[in-house]
Length: 447
Ligand code: NDP
Image 1 (tube, rainbow, N blue to C red):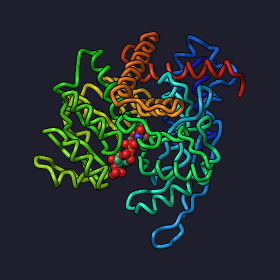
Image 2 (cartoon, helix red, strand yellow; image 1 turned 45 degrees about the vertical axis):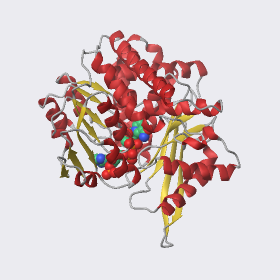
Image 3 (cartoon, rainbow, N blue to C red; image 1 turned 135 degrees about the vertical axis):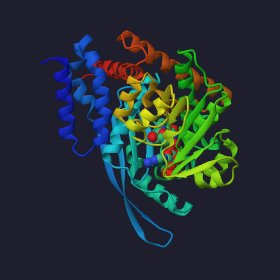
């Protein structure tokens, strides 16, 4: 069998064993494509069923989460934690609360997390979790009730040397607070290193809130610099208006760019003069209102209900909302409008057709597992501070983040060149992330 047939065999097996999980298939398929190049050079990576083991989570936990509404009604949601790979360190990865969550989504996110965490160069394994609970429109008390019930089960599966969850869609500082409180109560331990994204007065790290968005911009800055370009004077689209999007927009504007559009799941705003970050933060983080409210309060901003943000003209696009939000047609529109750089702040926001379009049209493309690794990297820095009972300054932590993102870019760039695929950051990220995990798995035996 040649390498392509071997790799296709792995993929067919994945589809068969994980039926009805298209996002997981998509994430695996992208990595397997890159591994074809690895196996042609180093066929020992096919030994000991290494790749089959890597695509099978070490552990998957699914549990019932009952909670009570303000009206006294009992609701039942489903909780998940997929502990994918702990060969490099304790499991690490976020929790997502969103009605679209199912096992396949959590598996795709957990799988991506293995390679992302490897790329950071820090000692962390890959995991992901969450629930199909919808936090939208819930009162604080209901959010607390849900988080407490969720942690009542989850606490038996996590710990600072075992598995360290963080936030993701629908899980921010408020939710991490309720989750941490319940963990402390269940275990009678103030174990700071069990969760990251904590409040600054009880073990949190400066820069964690900003880290994913800032990190995405730092990565993009490196990618632009490698092609004699920079943010200063560039027009940038940032999709989403949550944690990642807000801080990506902020950093891009600090570097001299103009953020010309942002979105949420209802529509997008056109902001030709740039985004007023302080107002946006007030609308989204303090008032927990919508982007349409931001538009009402700002002159010169138009709101497009249900519109497609990718039709706006820009030099750089940073998809920072959710998976598969940017499809092939949108990619063609971006390229036609002169967009030269796309970096994924979200996990897998670009469909395979979109990525293929970027390749054909010579739009430089940074995959999420490299470009958005700044969040988890800063979570690992939070763990380091917790372990040494220390807290670092904003500037020092931000510098560490910037250095980590520069290191990730270099690793992706160097690896792509090693395989004669200059500027193919997808291949560079997949192979650089894979080799470190694979070498450790081979060293640690058949587990
Ligand atoms: P938030 O919940 O803070 O924000 C999510 C944003 O995306 C909201 O503006 C939301 O709009 C929007 N959104 C969600 N679904 C859709 C959709 N179908 N179409 C358009 N917009 C949508 O999440 P985060 O910012 O934390 O996460 C965003 C992405 O970044 C996710 O893919 C996540 O996995 C990834 N990521 C996050 C990290 C982190 O540190 N937070 C780390 C690495 C990756 P609405 O309010 O209308 O739902």
